[in-house]
Length: 360
Ligand SMILES: [Zn+2]
Image 1 (cartoon, rainbow, N blue to C red):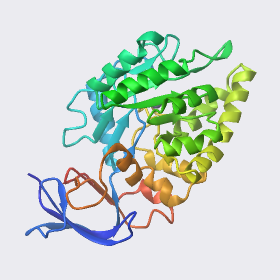
Image 2 (image 1 turned 90 degrees about the vertical axis):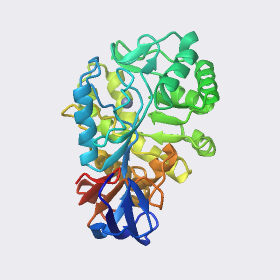
Image 3 (image 1 turned 60 degrees about the vertical axis):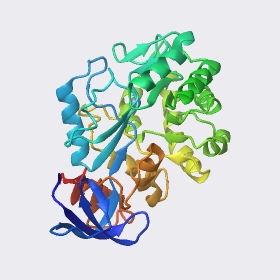
Image 4 (image 1 turned 180 degrees about the vertical axis):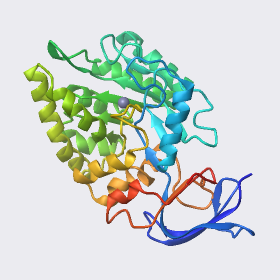
């Protein structure tokens, strides 16, 4: 049982003046006797979403740590982030994460899946290309219904490109995961990787550096999301600039510069663009900063309302969660100004309500 609460304000994206009561963790439009008014006259958003975050292990290769995971979950929640999609982790996430009252809701993807040579040793489950489909089904069934596959991996060692998962293997894995009701998130940093993901019909393209614009209409028709993760590329800029490989530096400069125009074009083409930070919880990539990703999306540029939706109602809908409506889970963030007129307002929620409890 939670204390009955009452909220009144302007809901987004509808812009309607709404009044909700909260009972047993759900929103209702039926007055609840004895409810305390906790929000009045604010802007109300469905709980924020970080669609690409990796809580639980801060240094590449570190094992998943329950205490670290719990702290990271609370950091997200304090910022109004009530739903996480975790596309890959060092180990499968424990079931308490995502269900306990002081933790956000979570959709996880099991362990990262990549060919030998991809990603960080200790964090990734390396599998041969012939075993990728089996492994993807296994991770999706053992987690929150998602799996995460590396289509490519760009490395700064000698050459530029690491291994690529052949397009037909990615397509096979996608068919198999969809057949068991799962969804597929794919990491791509190259044109070839992004093309293979679109042709395979995966559910979300993570990063998407190098994605060619001729694929955007097809992505939109396939209801495939793009999660550009500007936040991580901003921090990676320093690493790339320090590289001794001119080829690597040039690749990153061009890919990074192209990301804003790509995201604008994707939004215009009707592709679902989502906010994901790629945060690990390190000092350079802390959790609970999805508001920063919204700033990057708005600067791409995307219309402010769409950039905010990418971290709220649009992401919730894509992930199968309702917005602000009777019967929906009482996950609500309130702001004292309209965040569409200034997206930095998202940094300062005046109220965070999660599972019908006042977090802030
Ligand atoms: Zn990631």
